[in-house]
Length: 238
Image 1 (tube, rainbow, N blue to C red):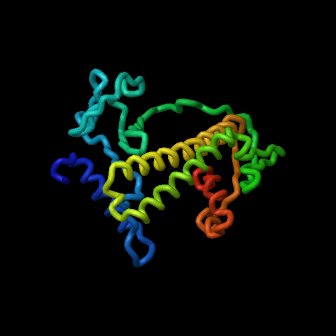
Image 2: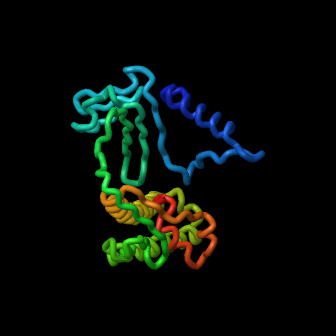
Image 3: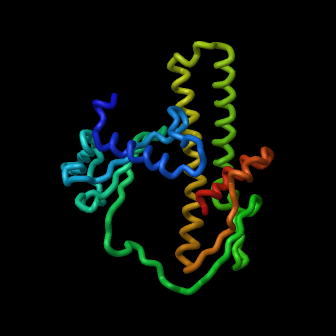
C-alpha cells in the first residue's frame, strides 16, 4: 500500500513519471514498468541527514531497516547521495552512489589508442590484432550444462501448465519457477563476468577506445542469430 511506503519513494516515482512525459518525442505514451517483467527496484535520494542511517550493522533507509552487517563503504554515511534497493531471484541488493572529490582509481595516460570491432564468431577484434571469443573467455562447458538444464526445466514447466490449468496455484509451480529464474540469473552473471574482465583489460591498457556503433534492436530481428546476439550483450558492452 502507498500509505506504508516512505514518502521519498513516492516523490521519486512522481518525478520519474513527469520526466518521462516531458521528454517524449512522439505523440504516444511512455513505457512504464511491468509487474512481472520489469526490474524490481526503487531509488532514494538523500534530502536530509536522517534519510540514511547506519548503526551496528543496521542500514536504515527512510522507514525501512536492513541487516547488512559490517560494510566498509558504509562508514562514511554522510557522503552517500543515492541508494537503490533491488531484488533478484537470489535476494536483495543495495547499490550506493557516493560523492567524492577525486578519482578513486586514476588511469595512467599511456597514449595508447585502440579500435574494437564487434562480431558474432569473434566477440571482439581490436586494431592490435587480438581477438577474444565468448567460448574461450569462460568455462563454456559449464555454461552449456546450465543452459541445457534450463531448457529441460522450461519444457517441464510448460508441459505441466498445459496438462493442469490450476498448476500455477501450487507450491511446486513456484519452486520450479524460482529455480528457472535462478538459472537465468547464473547465465547472465557468467556473461557479465566475461564482459567486465574484457572491458577492464581495455581500460587499463588504453587511453582512447573506439568501438563499432551498432543498433542491437535491429540485429535481434534475425531469429536465427538472435540468441547469439543477445548473449553478446553489445548494448552493455557499448
